[in-house]
View 1 (tube, rainbow, N blue to C red):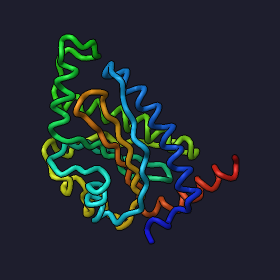
View 2 (tube, helix red, strand yellow):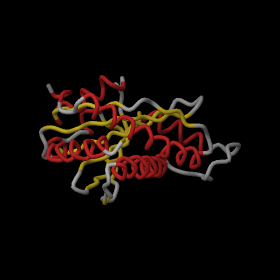
View 3 (cartoon, one colour):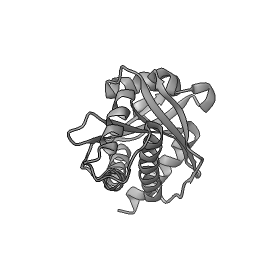
Length: 207
């Protein structure tokens, strides 16, 4: 029933919008890290917030500790953007940018600093592009570190969000030939789903 909240046409349109946003984010991340970035296909679900962790685990196969950064966004469509990666992956990426033979934007950087930079690039490019294509301009809250070695269940906090149902959009980015993958998860609040419907319908009718 939850997957029927969006029609097939609306879901396809949202995935295509996310595809275009991902391209912009990947280009920025490639410039930041001076390496090629591989992209996934966007995935869209409507979930109960208390089931979001299980849904994401099923989608991604993550079964170990993760590092996660969150950032809220709002217009008349509001939600949370989470950038999540395996804790071991953050260390691998840090080794990449700290390698003296790699001409990245860094000389030496901590895992936390690097994760904030990655999250800032992915959230800024993806969320802004998706909402701009829906004729919205988001306002972002300051990013915050949820934790560096968390179980996936501890990343999603239904009591903090105060929602029951959310639209979940997941895209992920990996670094070529490196064991690193970052997942951008947008959770859009239940009272925003109707506005997403309206925005997608307006977009589709204009084509």
